[in-house]
Length: 430
Ligand code: GLU
Image (cartoon, rainbow, N blue to C red; front, top):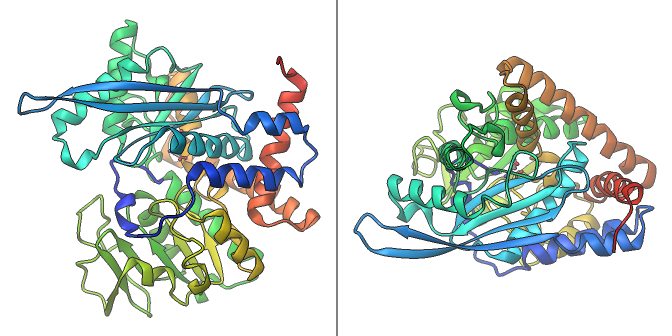
């Protein structure tokens, strides 16, 4: 994610009541395990998180009153390295949602061959109702409540929906002050001035664009002839759309929470301001046609990129999806049921754990920079990200071709064989 003090979530506007992230994550795991030579005990183990921390986060509001919010950190698996994954501020955060999302982080890090496991956390709060001062106090107190379970070698949070570089800066500062030493590696996605990496904020969108470009090439399409609709114009959607536009694709529709804009001849994606840059400017843009978010999903385009919230392509609307291919910018935008129908219809879905993995990959670069106390140039970040994405794409493509798998099953196969190999070699200690 989508990512940043963001708002990609705003763009979904869906109203269906589909299966939960955890249910989808577990069903995907079961299905993928059938294609991989991995011990069934390992698969059973991977259906459960190692630990879920629940904390109460008291917050003094600006009016002097006190509220208590509930926060979570789900740590799914760390066989390959420290837990890694975002923290979201969103009213619908639950323990189960964090567990489902933490499982996806485990696979995402393994697909990218990063030395990390998977985690996810957050606070059930609507950050838009808080002042900047309230958000700072909430973030600092949340950091304090999680202090025992996080750390550069234990669990490294990052931005996710509703959080961004500023929240990571407050988190890092609160942690460092209590530890008595500046510890930049405790979180990633920080501003570059305090040890953040150049290119981290736009990385998930950049990886979505890279993977989309590779998919276009794989299917022998011409990027100049390819039409794309992007749901969500926050950090993921806007960066992906602008890069693909630069590379020749025609971005015919984009959206924010208030609705979508459509131009069959292609929008000028630089001219449309992102939701983070100026809220309301997407749907307010002077385009030939406006439509709802639901209509955007059903547009007859070559590629649909859902880059807002999860669970937007569901059993209810999957029959109306007209795109030739789906590239998942958000985490978990396609439910298990919808995914199966897309497969039957022959519509490839490039999964989130590969497509938006640029975020956690540049987080890994950031963690390395923090440990070495040496910042990389933006150019180096771009080059190394490009190479990591191409390596992961090739590993997944080989499984697609050799075993006739869907892109999601192939990505899971790559991840599971790496995780399974590590678990079998280290040995379970039940
Ligand atoms: N929240 C991001 C994701 O879903 C990034 C996590 C990270 O960088 O650790 O991939």
